[in-house]
Amino acid sequence: MVRARNVHKSFGANEVLKGIDLDVGQGEVVVILGPSGSGKSTFLRCINQLEKMDRGSIEVAGEQIGYELRDGRLLALSPRAVARQRRRIGMVFQQFNLYPHMTVLQNVVEAPIGIHGVPRAEAEAYAMELLVKVGLPEKAHAYPRQLSGGQQQRVAIARALAIKPRLILFDEPTSALDPELVGEVLETMRGLADQGLTMIVVTHEIGFAREAADRVVFMDGGVVVEQGRPEDVLVNPRQPRTRAFLARVI
Ligand code: ADP
Ligand code: MG
Image 1: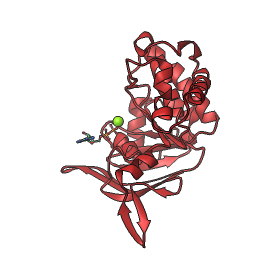
Image 2: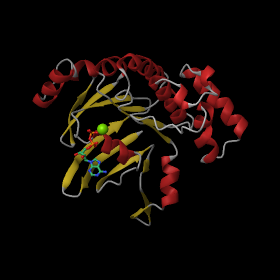
Image 3: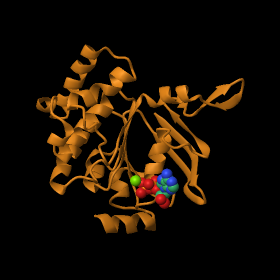
């Protein structure tokens, strides 16, 4: 589903991604761990074309992102074509970014109706299914400010699912939550993982990595330092940098 090769990204003189290689299979759940500032968010943002990589390539579902091959040459895609590619990638951020003036249901149907042109009745019926899935059908007509942080994040997950993404990216989805609200969001994410969604999750929740990840990737200093099955990477890390990081967070 994702094939990243030699992805580089600098901000001015600050080289943040120094050649990331990563493959994610269909239905795979990959958890990315790593210290703050190691480039995890930047990498997710490159996959979703919120940032433009400087060098390297990323394929999503077999399509080169940001470029197309025409007459044997790689040409930058038009903004419209980039928007089309982004439409099937869901993203959940640390800050839920719900529209405060819209109800939960309006938040969830906004992209399917506005961007994908799904008829309202169909979009709302599917949105209600998703709200059942994240455990919040009774909140459909509430406003974000009437919900707890955990509930808002579950709405944000429903909103990301509403576009029927082939890939969903989570960037520290529980980091902004009070500790007692983290569990309900992780539980929702575990449910999605069990349903075969392809997920890349940046998180510091080692328990989630252990239970839900097919693979754990440890990033540091803009490169992938180590990756493997959670029971290997989390229990017997091979690289000193992974060991030092895990000793700090577990
Ligand atoms: P992580 O998510 O692993 O904490 P980030 O990808 O957010 O790391 O950031 C990596 C580095 O890139 C940091 O030094 C950060 O300051 C820098 N950075 C991220 N986004 C920008 C930006 N838009 N402009 C300038 N520097 C940025
Ligand atoms: Mg980050």
